[in-house]
Structure formats: C-alpha cells, structure tokens
Length: 253
Ligand SMILES: [Zn+2]
Image (tube, rainbow, N blue to C red; front, side):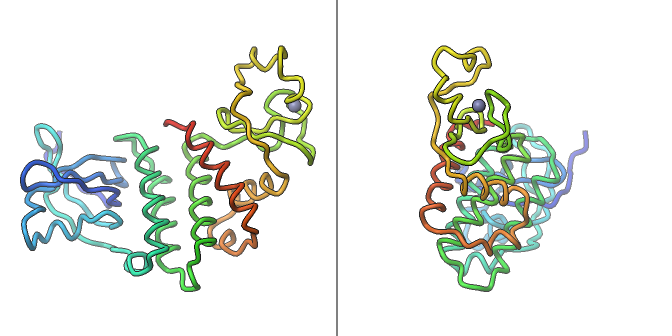
C-alpha cells in the first residue's frame, strides 16, 4: 500500500484529539469520508490548523498511520469567505455540513456527493442579494432533497405507495418511514388492509398539501439557480420544513 495519497477535500468537522492534535472529518474527492489526525494543530500559530477549519476546501496530503491516517500537509483552496462573513449563510452552511457528515458513510468514494456539496457551498458563498432566513431555509431544503436523492432516498411522489394509482390533488399523506405518498382512500382503508403485507407502516403519516408535493418535485429537479427564486409563503415553507425534518429522522444511512 502506498504510504501517502493526495486529494481535494471539504473539511466537515474538527475536534480535539490527544494533547496537541485534532481529529478532522474530511470528505475527500478521491477516497470519500475520512477521519484524519492533524498533528500539532492546537499549538499557537499552527499554519496547518488554519487550513483545516470546518467549511474549507483544501488539497490534502494524507500519510498512512498505524491507527488513524494523518495529514502531512494541507493547501487551502477556498475558505468560503462569503459564507463566513454572513451569519445567516454560516448558520445554514453549518446545518448542511452537519447533515452531510451524519448521512455519508466512511470511505465510500462518490464524486457526485463531493460536487453536490461543493457546488452548493459555492452558490451560497457567491450569493449577493440579501440572504434572508427564507432564502436560507429554501436553499438548505433544496440541498437536503437533492442529497437524499443521491443517497437513494428519493420519495415516490407520483403514485400512491399502496394502490399505485396516480395521485390526485386533495387529501394525501406523506409516509415518513418509506418516503412516499399514501392516498386518502388507502389511508381510510388502511386498517386490516394489505398495507401490512406490503411492509408499509401507516403510523408515521403527515398530511401533505398539493403545493408541498409540487414544491418537493420542483426542488428535486431544479438547480439552486432556479430554486432560490421561488416565491413561497411562510406556511408552505414551514410545512415543507417539518415534513423534511420528519423524514430525516427516519433516514439512517
Ligand atoms: Zn392509494
């Protein structure tokens, strides 16, 4: 095995490790998510430390260690100063990094995930209009659903999970456990019906409005450049936020 390897990496997290070191969680382009030791980063004026802050893009040289591998050198590529200088941007970027770290498995290389996160961070970094809470919520929800799709959790929004009929507008339910929609008649008939045979849990349902279905479809299929322009009222944004959070609680990748 080679003793050193190189990769661009997005730094997701950093925590103290031993007396003078840090343990870095990095999502690398070439090797997926890695936990790496950065030596001496707690000493004053450590040059390495400043290139390994969370929310940084850096080129890492990684050296094989006995336990954890460690970082031989880090060359800063982008510190996302446009995000760091805006508290709202920083808050939503922090949420996105945390979600990414929670759901991405170790050591699985996936360039699409790397660029999904990098492109999102670059878009937010360069965003010049007022970055309101509404914009932040919408963009982080956009990232969340695109990310879930990449991980294989795209919700079934066209047909009912149980009867497979095309969904009609009106009363529908979102199944948080299975990530899809259950129609009103299946919901009414759910007791003693074939839902159990199909392994569909009907206890974790939230009502979902037609507009909310539409907006999830739209954000899954469109880039940030279109999504941030959507006019969405507070009620719908809050419905979408709650539904997304509810769904995320069931996703353990
Ligand atoms: Zn149905």
